[in-house]
Image (cartoon, rainbow, N blue to C red):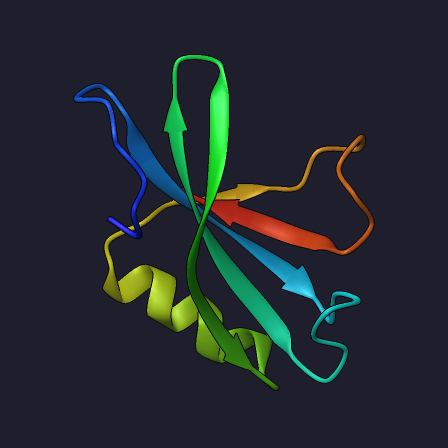
Length: 81
């Protein structure tokens, strides 16, 4: 799992970003491992110039979309669990 020890009660989530600073030419979906009180980023990510491509990838994984929260970073589009 990308060299990260994953507790048995952890799960993954994906956050989609709108052209973040480190990838200014694409939408990026980054995978995080979620445990008790922690969200650990992994090295796994998807990139596309088209937001709908990433949404379709999330749906194919059987994930559910959560809309962004008002306090989220402005680059966050949505999160999938």
